Length: 536
Image (cartoon, rainbow, N blue to C red):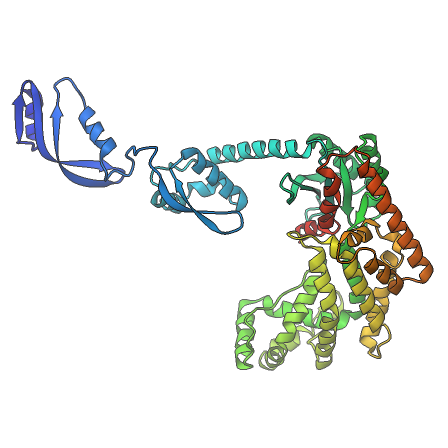
């Protein structure tokens, strides 16, 4: 009777007492999540039973977003595929998969762990899937580390598989904080004959000495259990010759080198192009500095940038991009700065007329010298010639620095294109170009003028292309070198091809690896250029 009295006081007047059980008929208000809804529901409240009927209703109520649905029930949804498409699949809610997907989101998009604690993020997830409880930053960091450990174990198993050989690319640099870093990337072909690349080390280095770098590479290989290395691609620093010798000795000791590691060291093609163009830029500093200073002046202040955009509109320039300021260490950024600035030549002229401070800016002295600028009509003319000439080198750099497609099969084609361009323009009457070309040709001859300085595997890749075989390299050798040198190179390439065939035909290598080494190499000859993005 006490329970009846309580329920009556709560406004539940429709009460019947039947065989010791209380039958309650009332309009029930239940709180599910943060929302309330009303039902007309019938409960049997037993004298000695607590809230079992209420809890049973909570589990089955269709309006409750947290109700325990049938685990076998699936929902049709579109799932994104690796190639960017989508497939219609039947899926069910899985807490573990959601946690893993959230951890991968943090890793792939380089988010801070605290992103999961943002109120907006939690509201978004609650709308997507109310059943999923968003973990905290410590939990998600633990999930991220667990995924890393699992993926690392999988990768190590692949890299240590019998017959698996890899190509390495590595680069070292010093950050603005005067701390030196090194990155090592491994390239390999998986069981499905797809080219893969993975960063296997990213660490600080005490100095840039060859032995120091070589020991770090050795330590990385031992940690991953890698013994078979086909090539190591590095830039043209003199210390890298010592690094290559150190790694060669270690790989030979592990009996993992091909042809005794004689052609282990590959010099980065993009780095050589960078050195060649930089020599040409030093001869053309004045007109580049005039445009560079103008771009820097306009970009240094939002009001100046707005005034410049007004000039662009008045001159009816249709180009929608903005001004680009170059980076001193990357010549291609200088090329892009000049290419864009040329589109705004008329806007610069109008800006000079409308902004008195623009001219006075160049009257100031920097390091005791008057600043160069503003750009004259002659400067713009020189920039136009310069951009047209360097377009070839810019395209070559993009091809050499490619990361999603093979590069070394086009390597020698691009070398011949650069050589042809330099020879053609060396005798032009234009003093601007001739001065620049002479300097660049000297640097080209230093690295690529003598075929003995080029890793012969780069020639071999062209020979393995069924479209060219030995005919195209022979034609290029005759065009670039004298007849004696061309004959010597052809004999050398044929000899290396025979030695490689014997090496793989003797049965010492795994069947999968007999063909894959050179296929890996076709991506790696210029891959170290990718690491140089970290310099900026």
